[in-house]
Length: 254
Image (tube, rainbow, N blue to C red):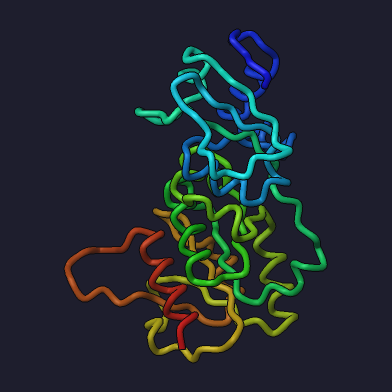
């Protein structure tokens, strides 16, 4: 088993750069996950795992299938440099982002489109909720937080390995979906229908927007229908991730 004890090791430098620099994650198609639960989810699709890093104070569970995965021991100093949680469990995975077949994308008929949502915790929660609701894919538009930000990964709790998450031009996606007769729903306060009054079908795309300004007006104009979660109390609005969960289930369940 390989062991690294120097923070100046080239691999350690690469791991730290993946944690801190979005452009590095985009360029390499790689990312780092931390903690037993996320690493366990990763190794269920071991073809996407490049390395598992384990600290001196931790150990790999005996029931994990880690055959053909490189295991690297790290000391506590490196562990602390990689840790992004206050009480780290001392285990990390260096992973590859999934590559997606363009032909497969044309088969997606239940989608969540996210327009410029900036909080990584919200993005991760929406990915996790879309996974739970049986959505085919999540499309992240321009201005949205990185899908592979550490906070996004923790909030999604492993759903990155269950549901495709892709960056894309939402205007182009909406045009393509409408060509395939997939209804596109926007979310807006004005000229909108309560979600529970919407006619449901086997396919749909839901667009949700920025925490403060909502969906870009030009994109909102391209929707087939705009929907809303009615507010019956005194709150002015719902958190975007909470509203997304209500709407996804409202559109999915018949």
